[in-house]
Length: 252
Image: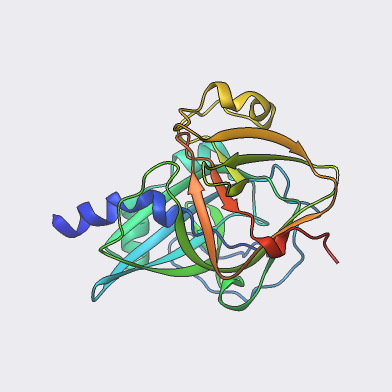
């Protein structure tokens, strides 16, 4: 089916659309989506916090609309429960044409602040796991193909805060743009851990002119997205956000 093929080809691009804050779990039944007010406090730190997501995708005219649901603050996405998630059941539960799974992944920032359209929404139960709606993102059918190390723009209103003294992992492009790892993935390599990141350059298939390095932060780094974030992924599906000039200041 042509539509489903187009949606599937967009999976990496859509999975870059993570915008999160944390809420408390809902006591909803597993069988139907159940909305609850977004409440509760975020984790003390999101650094190396494990999470999973699913995206429900609908076609509206020439655009794909993806709703992003995330486990952060509700559970740590237990491996057995995540493996048992049934895409067809989610598709029926939410009455959508396509469902995409993203995870497990681990955040690298210490704190996430979401505002505007990127604030969390209803909490639902799927396969015994709690998920909170984090974002709704639109994409055109003409910009579907995603390539490692190719920059994409994602609609998002967030601040990702990396604390002073923390280790950050960066990609630098040939034209001098610096991208900071926002999450690492166990999708391409289920054994990848945070301890592997300092030597990741030996495993990445970096294009000519690209550089990967570990940096210890002298000040807080705040990666800001005021409506748009510039993101890339490496060939192991780890995600990075571009540092903008306004980001190079300590967190007030």
